[in-house]
Image 1 (tube, helix red, strand yellow):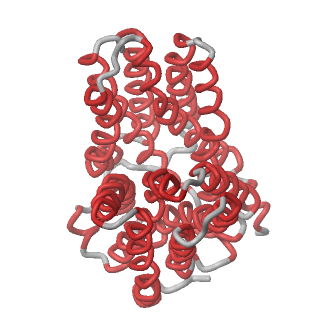
Image 2: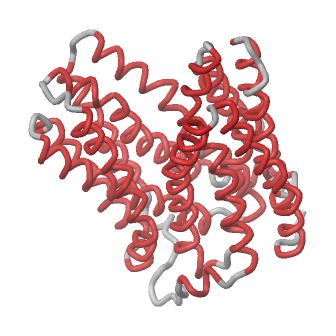
Length: 389
């Protein structure tokens, strides 16, 4: 069967994956601006705001190894519906009771769990429902939905806040949660992957599989380059440049890569592209430490966007390549857990190095370690995950 006809037969399901990713990421991204909303209502203690913002990510990360087990026990449809309802309740609670720091903490924690369950459930479903021959392109297109909210939704949310329309802003996540619920209900029983009576293995089975071990190592290294974005403002400030020149460019290029370069993920050997993807992003980050103009930041953002645009969906699609069906829910949970963990570790490590040396030195050290690790990870992939293409 031709590639186009093959993907076309899954077009309806692929659209659900795109919209599901768009909805759950919109749900999380809108709250990036929550501090502005809270300050308007008198909650401006940096410590309290930090906890309200951070507890979402903490619960989301900690719960990921466990939500995979929930997905195994329920059908994907039920898991996604339950996750959407939790997001709906939490966002409505934030809209109604966010003037109370205690309630805000409670509903943000609920939101972290709900979004984690939805994300892991949707990704696991995709690894099982989509055939191997189009798995790469399906993830490349589907993850375009993870970037789109930064371009489409976040600017709108900020405009509402800057225009004084605080009530409209705080209800936007409710709409995103409702979209999650609509996607969950749109997964008909004909789309379901059978889960009943399956032997889903244990985490011990997951961690002793050599191919999955290599995938986890690659995910951690790749995610460290992804999470470097969190500390980029410090480097830009040190150089007197605009962090947005790099961040906006890489996001736009990454989106273009996923929309127009998705066929590459099926035509090229995915296991051979993993190490090159984080090699490219690390080289771009290293380059940032040597340049002194916003134009150079933009050009390096293009390079980084190419590596990130391919690398992120590639590592998600590699779950299906590395893990047998029965291990995919737990393997998927761990991949998302490791990515979240890197978003915690990266700014901490960078911060300590920057305090001792500088942000420039910190970025050079971390980038150099990642660049030098790429050939070794590539050899591990060749040994434990033979290319099928």
